[in-house]
Image (tube, rainbow, N blue to C red; front, side, top):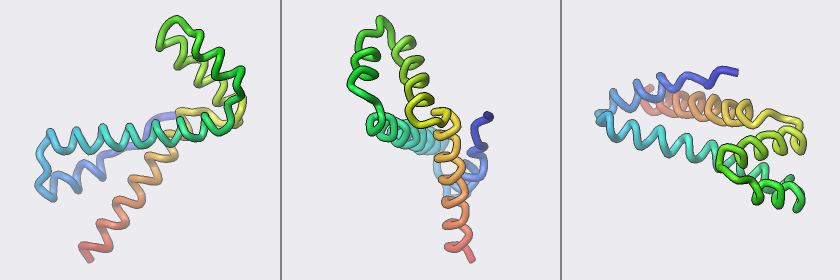
Length: 103
């Protein structure tokens, strides 16, 4: 699944006079929020055994792979797809709010 386009958000921020650095910071915060939402969902369904298995991983890459596997197993959803849905919803709401304010 392709990540959603953040171009509408970027265009609105540029129109508001945001610098490239400010836009980058905003997008980084958005990505962090999407990850935290997925992480909170995961922690609410992971078992103690899941967490112990993740903790024993030798590398961050291995741990991330286990997190994705357990997320799929416990939620029935793909973690990346859930993050994409979060971002799509954000873009939709951001654009809608902007449209209301500029109408």
